Amino acid sequence: MKLFVDKKEIKLEFANTFLKRLKGFMGKKNIKTALRFKTKSIHTFFMKEPIDLLLTTKDNKILYIYKNFSPNKILIKKDTYYIYELPNNFLKNTSLNSKIKIIKK
Image (cartoon, rainbow, N blue to C red; front, side):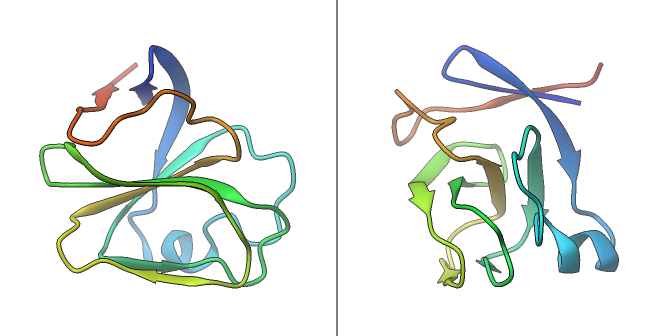
C-alpha cells in the first residue's frame, strides 16, 4: 500500500493485529514507512525517536496534525477513526480538513 500526503508518497502498513498494534514503531530508528491504526489513542513509550501523526475520520479527512511528537507520551482524541504514524519531519504543508489517499500497489 502507498499513502499520499502533501504530494509525497510513503509505504503504508496496517497495524491490524494485536502484535502489530502493540509493537508499532517501538525500538525502531530511522523510520521510513507509515503505520495506520484503527484507534482513538496511541502511546509512544519505548520509541527511539519522535514521529509525525495524522488523526483522521473514517474517510481519511484530517482532523489533527502532530509534528515531532515525542517519545513517552499518550494521545487520546475521541473523535478520530484512524491514526497514522509517519517518520519525523515527513509532514510539511499538510492542512486540516484535507484528505489523504491510499492506493493499493
